[in-house]
Image (tube, rainbow, N blue to C red):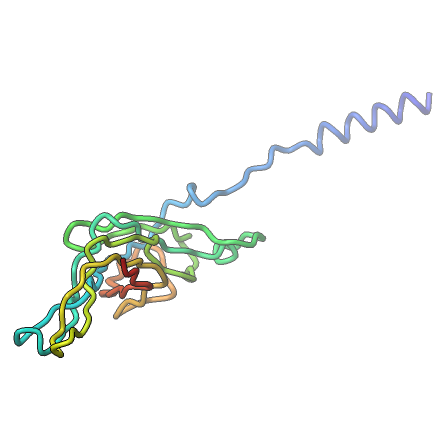
Amino acid sequence: MKKFYFIAFAALMLMTGCEKETAVTITDIRTKAELTGKVTYAPGYTTTDYGKNISTLDNVAAAGQTLVFEVDYSSYGYQATGKKVFETTIETDGSFTISIPVPESQSLSISDVYVRPFFVEDYADYMLNKQDVYVIVPTRAYYAGNLYFSNMVTTIEANNTYYIGKANLSASEVISE
């Protein structure tokens, strides 16, 4: 008889203790913060004064490149390590807009912002020739690394739009042919 009561008690405990757990995920968050800005890159150099001086070419739109924003999972209040990655594609004029889910009653910290690495095949490097004249040399360049925006914010809140300014990316490595 004790066995019967034990089994009945255990069954009752199992039935009352089984509540369906619900997990809130980032996709469930309805409120967002919007970030806008512009990304350009420096495609090399140009000569002026018939090759006597050089100057940097700047402000070419990084059109079609992937812009990445990383937010620590711990910023969402999760007991998890790592980062949630949000991506957007840069428009033809260099502008971008990205919406990042932010819970209503808290703020998030953006840990990193960068462009996925890319190559520019027609990078313009320079060299000084034997006549002491700068000559443009076509080469390739590799772009990678974190971006630093002129008005960057590191903490965002729900239902706000942030213009984070402009970032100009310089070549990480120039590959001479």
